[in-house]
Image 1 (cartoon, helix red, strand yellow):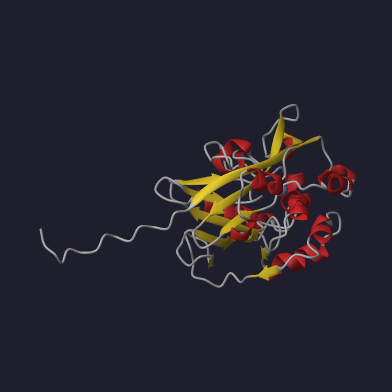
Image 2: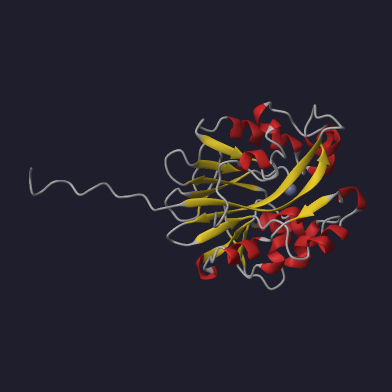
Length: 271
Ligand SMILES: [Zn+2]
Protein backbone atom coordinates (compact mmCIF):
# COMPACT_ATOMS: atom_id res chain seq x y z
CA UNK A 1 0.00 0.00 0.00
CA UNK A 2 1.42 3.35 -0.93
CA UNK A 3 0.24 6.87 -0.39
CA UNK A 4 0.92 8.03 -3.91
CA UNK A 5 -1.27 5.50 -5.67
CA UNK A 6 -2.60 6.65 -9.03
CA UNK A 7 -5.95 8.42 -8.80
CA UNK A 8 -8.88 6.26 -9.78
CA UNK A 9 -9.60 6.21 -13.48
CA UNK A 10 -11.95 8.98 -14.46
CA UNK A 11 -15.49 7.74 -14.28
CA UNK A 12 -17.17 8.25 -17.63
CA UNK A 13 -20.03 10.71 -17.61
CA UNK A 14 -23.35 9.05 -16.88
CA UNK A 15 -25.27 8.88 -20.10
CA UNK A 16 -28.72 7.32 -20.37
CA UNK A 17 -30.90 6.58 -23.38
CA UNK A 18 -34.71 6.44 -23.39
CA UNK A 19 -37.30 5.84 -26.09
CA UNK A 20 -40.38 8.03 -26.41
CA UNK A 21 -42.85 6.31 -28.75
CA UNK A 22 -45.47 8.80 -29.97
CA UNK A 23 -47.49 6.57 -32.28
CA UNK A 24 -47.38 4.48 -35.41
CA UNK A 25 -48.48 4.60 -39.01
CA UNK A 26 -49.15 1.70 -41.29
CA UNK A 27 -47.17 0.87 -44.39
CA UNK A 28 -47.36 -2.26 -46.55
CA UNK A 29 -44.10 -4.19 -46.18
CA UNK A 30 -43.93 -4.20 -49.98
CA UNK A 31 -43.33 -0.46 -49.83
CA UNK A 32 -41.04 -0.58 -46.81
CA UNK A 33 -38.23 -2.81 -48.06
CA UNK A 34 -37.37 -4.81 -51.12
CA UNK A 35 -38.83 -8.31 -50.88
CA UNK A 36 -41.57 -7.24 -48.45
CA UNK A 37 -45.04 -8.62 -49.18
CA UNK A 38 -47.98 -6.37 -49.87
CA UNK A 39 -50.27 -8.22 -47.46
CA UNK A 40 -47.70 -7.96 -44.67
CA UNK A 41 -48.30 -4.56 -43.12
CA UNK A 42 -45.72 -2.88 -40.99
CA UNK A 43 -46.46 -0.45 -38.20
CA UNK A 44 -43.92 2.31 -38.64
CA UNK A 45 -42.91 3.66 -35.24
CA UNK A 46 -42.78 7.42 -34.75
CA UNK A 47 -40.42 7.25 -31.82
CA UNK A 48 -38.15 9.94 -30.44
CA UNK A 49 -35.11 9.27 -28.27
CA UNK A 50 -33.89 11.13 -25.21
CA UNK A 51 -30.18 11.05 -24.38
CA UNK A 52 -29.53 12.25 -20.87
CA UNK A 53 -26.08 13.62 -20.23
CA UNK A 54 -24.60 15.61 -17.33
CA UNK A 55 -23.82 18.46 -19.72
CA UNK A 56 -27.40 18.61 -21.02
CA UNK A 57 -29.99 16.33 -22.56
CA UNK A 58 -30.87 16.04 -26.22
CA UNK A 59 -33.76 14.54 -28.11
CA UNK A 60 -33.23 12.74 -31.39
CA UNK A 61 -36.24 13.61 -33.56
CA UNK A 62 -39.58 14.74 -32.18
CA UNK A 63 -42.19 12.11 -33.15
CA UNK A 64 -45.86 13.02 -33.61
CA UNK A 65 -46.96 16.31 -32.10
CA UNK A 66 -50.17 17.73 -30.69
CA UNK A 67 -51.22 18.73 -34.21
CA UNK A 68 -50.18 15.50 -35.93
CA UNK A 69 -53.66 15.01 -37.46
CA UNK A 70 -53.39 18.39 -39.12
CA UNK A 71 -49.86 17.62 -40.26
CA UNK A 72 -50.98 14.34 -41.82
CA UNK A 73 -53.90 16.05 -43.57
CA UNK A 74 -51.46 18.54 -45.10
CA UNK A 75 -49.52 15.75 -46.85
CA UNK A 76 -50.14 14.60 -50.42
CA UNK A 77 -52.77 11.82 -50.39
CA UNK A 78 -50.32 9.03 -51.26
CA UNK A 79 -48.31 9.77 -48.11
CA UNK A 80 -51.25 9.60 -45.71
CA UNK A 81 -51.93 6.25 -44.08
CA UNK A 82 -53.82 4.74 -41.16
CA UNK A 83 -52.14 5.85 -37.98
CA UNK A 84 -52.35 5.72 -34.24
CA UNK A 85 -51.38 8.69 -32.12
CA UNK A 86 -50.01 8.21 -28.61
CA UNK A 87 -48.63 10.66 -26.06
CA UNK A 88 -46.41 13.35 -27.53
CA UNK A 89 -42.78 13.78 -26.51
CA UNK A 90 -43.81 16.90 -24.61
CA UNK A 91 -46.45 14.97 -22.64
CA UNK A 92 -44.04 12.13 -21.90
CA UNK A 93 -41.36 14.52 -20.65
CA UNK A 94 -43.88 16.20 -18.36
CA UNK A 95 -45.31 12.90 -17.12
CA UNK A 96 -41.80 11.81 -16.16
CA UNK A 97 -41.12 15.11 -14.40
CA UNK A 98 -38.28 15.88 -16.78
CA UNK A 99 -36.68 19.29 -16.21
CA UNK A 100 -37.08 21.08 -19.57
CA UNK A 101 -34.23 23.35 -18.59
CA UNK A 102 -31.90 20.38 -19.10
CA UNK A 103 -32.80 20.07 -22.79
CA UNK A 104 -30.16 21.46 -25.13
CA UNK A 105 -32.39 20.79 -28.11
CA UNK A 106 -33.67 18.32 -30.66
CA UNK A 107 -31.22 16.79 -33.12
CA UNK A 108 -33.15 16.12 -36.32
CA UNK A 109 -32.05 13.09 -38.31
CA UNK A 110 -33.86 14.90 -41.14
CA UNK A 111 -36.76 17.27 -41.70
CA UNK A 112 -39.59 14.96 -42.87
CA UNK A 113 -42.96 15.42 -41.17
CA UNK A 114 -42.90 12.21 -39.14
CA UNK A 115 -39.68 13.34 -37.42
CA UNK A 116 -40.54 16.98 -36.78
CA UNK A 117 -44.30 17.02 -36.05
CA UNK A 118 -43.63 17.00 -32.28
CA UNK A 119 -41.72 20.27 -32.48
CA UNK A 120 -45.18 21.86 -32.39
CA UNK A 121 -45.26 21.34 -28.64
CA UNK A 122 -41.57 21.52 -27.74
CA UNK A 123 -40.14 24.93 -26.99
CA UNK A 124 -36.51 23.90 -27.43
CA UNK A 125 -33.72 24.68 -29.90
CA UNK A 126 -33.52 22.63 -33.09
CA UNK A 127 -30.10 21.30 -34.06
CA UNK A 128 -29.91 20.96 -37.81
CA UNK A 129 -27.42 21.14 -40.68
CA UNK A 130 -27.46 24.00 -43.19
CA UNK A 131 -27.91 21.41 -45.93
CA UNK A 132 -31.08 20.05 -44.33
CA UNK A 133 -32.50 23.55 -43.95
CA UNK A 134 -31.98 24.02 -47.69
CA UNK A 135 -33.65 20.66 -48.34
CA UNK A 136 -36.65 21.59 -46.18
CA UNK A 137 -36.99 25.00 -47.84
CA UNK A 138 -37.17 23.30 -51.26
CA UNK A 139 -39.60 20.58 -50.14
CA UNK A 140 -42.85 20.55 -52.09
CA UNK A 141 -45.12 17.79 -50.80
CA UNK A 142 -44.09 17.83 -47.15
CA UNK A 143 -44.32 21.30 -45.63
CA UNK A 144 -44.71 20.31 -41.99
CA UNK A 145 -41.21 21.49 -41.07
CA UNK A 146 -42.11 24.96 -42.32
CA UNK A 147 -45.22 24.90 -40.12
CA UNK A 148 -43.62 23.76 -36.89
CA UNK A 149 -40.24 25.44 -36.97
CA UNK A 150 -41.14 29.15 -36.66
CA UNK A 151 -40.39 30.32 -33.15
CA UNK A 152 -37.71 27.72 -32.59
CA UNK A 153 -34.12 28.66 -32.04
CA UNK A 154 -32.37 27.02 -35.03
CA UNK A 155 -28.86 25.95 -34.11
CA UNK A 156 -27.05 25.15 -37.32
CA UNK A 157 -24.00 22.96 -36.74
CA UNK A 158 -21.30 21.87 -39.15
CA UNK A 159 -20.12 18.31 -39.66
CA UNK A 160 -16.52 19.48 -39.61
CA UNK A 161 -15.07 17.05 -37.08
CA UNK A 162 -12.78 14.10 -37.90
CA UNK A 163 -13.85 10.86 -39.59
CA UNK A 164 -15.73 8.63 -37.15
CA UNK A 165 -16.35 4.86 -37.33
CA UNK A 166 -16.12 4.76 -41.12
CA UNK A 167 -18.01 7.99 -41.74
CA UNK A 168 -16.01 10.76 -43.40
CA UNK A 169 -16.84 13.55 -40.92
CA UNK A 170 -18.51 14.11 -37.58
CA UNK A 171 -19.82 16.51 -34.97
CA UNK A 172 -19.12 15.48 -31.38
CA UNK A 173 -21.88 17.19 -29.44
CA UNK A 174 -20.41 17.09 -25.93
CA UNK A 175 -16.78 16.62 -26.96
CA UNK A 176 -16.58 13.29 -25.13
CA UNK A 177 -17.64 10.84 -27.83
CA UNK A 178 -20.98 10.08 -26.19
CA UNK A 179 -23.15 11.73 -28.86
CA UNK A 180 -21.51 11.92 -32.28
CA UNK A 181 -23.43 13.07 -35.33
CA UNK A 182 -22.28 11.77 -38.74
CA UNK A 183 -23.46 12.68 -42.25
CA UNK A 184 -25.74 10.25 -44.13
CA UNK A 185 -26.89 12.47 -47.00
CA UNK A 186 -29.04 10.28 -49.21
CA UNK A 187 -32.57 9.93 -47.91
CA UNK A 188 -32.51 13.73 -47.72
CA UNK A 189 -29.54 15.87 -48.69
CA UNK A 190 -28.84 16.86 -45.08
CA UNK A 191 -29.71 13.60 -43.28
CA UNK A 192 -27.56 12.54 -40.35
CA UNK A 193 -27.14 9.53 -38.08
CA UNK A 194 -26.49 9.90 -34.35
CA UNK A 195 -24.05 7.51 -32.70
CA UNK A 196 -24.59 7.28 -28.94
CA UNK A 197 -22.32 5.63 -26.40
CA UNK A 198 -24.01 5.39 -23.04
CA UNK A 199 -21.69 2.87 -21.42
CA UNK A 200 -20.54 -0.72 -21.87
CA UNK A 201 -23.08 -2.65 -23.91
CA UNK A 202 -24.97 0.57 -24.57
CA UNK A 203 -23.90 1.74 -28.00
CA UNK A 204 -26.46 2.82 -30.53
CA UNK A 205 -26.58 4.12 -34.07
CA UNK A 206 -29.81 6.05 -34.59
CA UNK A 207 -29.80 6.04 -38.37
CA UNK A 208 -33.02 7.93 -39.07
CA UNK A 209 -34.56 6.80 -42.36
CA UNK A 210 -31.38 5.41 -43.91
CA UNK A 211 -33.44 2.22 -43.70
CA UNK A 212 -37.07 2.13 -42.63
CA UNK A 213 -36.96 -1.34 -41.15
CA UNK A 214 -34.27 -3.58 -39.70
CA UNK A 215 -34.67 -5.74 -42.80
CA UNK A 216 -32.91 -2.91 -44.61
CA UNK A 217 -29.89 -3.36 -42.36
CA UNK A 218 -29.81 -7.07 -41.61
CA UNK A 219 -30.46 -8.37 -45.09
CA UNK A 220 -29.11 -5.39 -46.94
CA UNK A 221 -32.61 -5.02 -48.38
CA UNK A 222 -32.94 -1.65 -49.99
CA UNK A 223 -36.13 0.27 -50.24
CA UNK A 224 -38.24 -0.98 -53.16
CA UNK A 225 -37.24 0.78 -56.37
CA UNK A 226 -40.34 2.95 -56.58
CA UNK A 227 -39.89 4.15 -53.00
CA UNK A 228 -36.18 4.80 -53.54
CA UNK A 229 -37.11 7.04 -56.43
CA UNK A 230 -39.94 8.70 -54.52
CA UNK A 231 -38.38 8.98 -51.10
CA UNK A 232 -34.62 9.27 -51.48
CA UNK A 233 -32.69 12.29 -52.72
CA UNK A 234 -29.76 10.10 -53.71
CA UNK A 235 -30.29 6.29 -53.56
CA UNK A 236 -26.61 5.58 -54.33
CA UNK A 237 -25.55 7.50 -51.24
CA UNK A 238 -28.13 5.65 -49.15
CA UNK A 239 -26.60 2.38 -50.36
CA UNK A 240 -23.08 3.55 -49.50
CA UNK A 241 -24.13 4.66 -46.01
CA UNK A 242 -26.03 1.42 -45.41
CA UNK A 243 -22.71 -0.35 -46.08
CA UNK A 244 -20.99 1.93 -43.56
CA UNK A 245 -23.65 1.16 -40.98
CA UNK A 246 -23.34 -2.57 -41.64
CA UNK A 247 -19.59 -2.24 -40.98
CA UNK A 248 -20.02 -0.62 -37.56
CA UNK A 249 -18.60 -2.60 -34.62
CA UNK A 250 -20.90 -5.50 -33.72
CA UNK A 251 -21.77 -4.08 -30.30
CA UNK A 252 -23.38 -1.01 -31.85
CA UNK A 253 -27.13 -1.48 -31.99
CA UNK A 254 -28.56 -0.13 -35.23
CA UNK A 255 -31.88 1.64 -34.78
CA UNK A 256 -33.79 2.61 -37.96
CA UNK A 257 -36.18 5.32 -36.81
CA UNK A 258 -39.36 3.51 -37.80
CA UNK A 259 -38.70 -0.07 -36.69
CA UNK A 260 -40.35 -0.65 -33.30
CA UNK A 261 -38.35 -3.88 -32.89
CA UNK A 262 -35.10 -1.93 -32.94
CA UNK A 263 -36.07 -0.05 -29.77
CA UNK A 264 -36.68 -3.22 -27.73
CA UNK A 265 -34.73 -2.99 -24.50
CA UNK A 266 -34.36 0.79 -24.60
CA UNK A 267 -36.31 1.95 -21.55
CA UNK A 268 -39.33 4.22 -21.69
CA UNK A 269 -38.97 7.50 -19.89
CA UNK A 270 -40.34 7.25 -16.38
CA UNK A 271 -40.78 3.45 -16.61
ZN1 LIG B 1 -39.46 8.96 -41.54
